[in-house]
Length: 212
Image 1 (cartoon, helix red, strand yellow):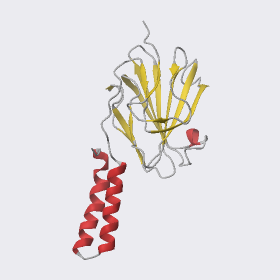
Image 2 (image 1 turned 180 degrees about the horizontal axis):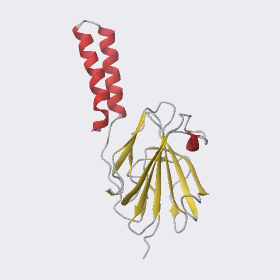
Image 3 (image 1 turned 30 degrees about the vertical axis):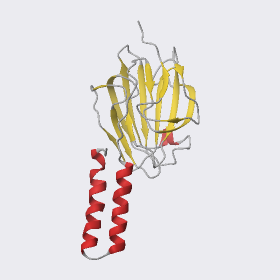
Image 4 (image 1 turned 90 degrees about the vertical axis):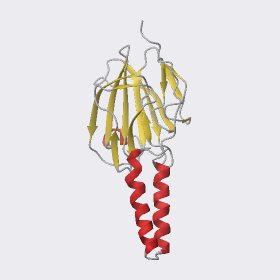
């Protein structure tokens, strides 16, 4: 299955290839067809089966866990937070998904640079989009899409006020690169560590019991 965001990227190289074939430009036709096929691969949107347990936190991205640590961000939350960083390689699925079931409270876009996302300064300096998602019991989750060196655009599929279910597609980084997830340390259990391979909407990153 191909996400609709990829249709122009697939169609125009294919059209170029067809036109080149009409004019007997075989090499150009092959190049256009290869580019169209590569774009179709990049924009693939495989079906995912997320866990239905509302206490579980699912991965928001495909890729490799490159950061898993505790931090404090007083401008976001008064207590300590878990931070999990996921690096998406160019051949990973780039559809990003909601880590929990809840409501989109806020979406903030920040212009920035396009530094390599495996470097720590990229979080503060690169172009990014921050989603604040509130679980039904009030627990906040921050998901950040960070554009990298070859990223062209961050695209959101949701708006503030939208309800989301864990595993729902909420955005894409076109040809881009890293997703960060922050959530409260209190009561959280973590099931992954740095180096683990994860899949958006399916891999369980951790668990926070629902407040009673």
